[in-house]
Image (cartoon, rainbow, N blue to C red; front, side):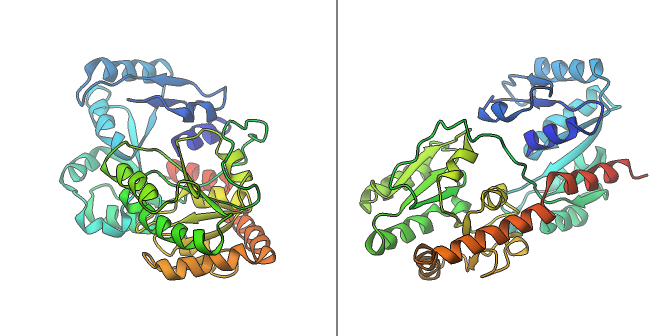
Length: 341
């Protein structure tokens, strides 16, 4: 969302830039050409060179606000020490919003004294901030998506049969529950072997991703499930697919869901986080209980075998996205909130 905010604000305020602390990724390719970009190449927690490089950038450009995403709040706090005039907005998109009772809050509570405002990507995170942190200027703002002109930028050609492709946009993290996806794929291989699953998202090369790869081999799904890692041509990937799925145990409001809707994909998702506020079950998508392999498989079979239903769900979801989760609506709320006295 950092890139989306930088691009959106650039059209609406006098200056909007983006700063990357550690790793330069493919998201840089999605940055508008008029958005200033700074890479800090931060090497450690207390990297004074990176800290003062950022301080200089902010002073030169006369920046009053900095929006720190997720764990970047800790570096923003260090910045506040060397540049007291800066106002910090924390964009909290903690991924385990179903497990907030286990979230460590002591350090965040102290830091929140110095925070101007908090943007939460779902209602649970907003409520958690109000209950646990000192900063009380808190707003819930849904993630948003924008139309991307990527139809000519096709770098990733999906495997499998054209017209029978299912996509899952999710980093390889345990809460995304790719195990459920593989169980569903195993059943689908028997009933509809020509349909394939395409997993797009960051591979952290850890024990979880190793387990996913091992299970694909163990279940004999090498020709049914494909891993692509992080991709910077997401729009073109979605345009190759017919169904979008999310199998998560925990979510906020995933950007993937909005991207599915923007491309009119028929969607099946577990009913977690803010997803049921976006998907009207059986009208703009299909919702199933978390960890319910049988229900998910049945829903997938229904979509595979009913072209008319797929088209209807996709069209209705896109209408919902455009009406509620557009850049224009979110930016209006955001700018008004920042300017509130």
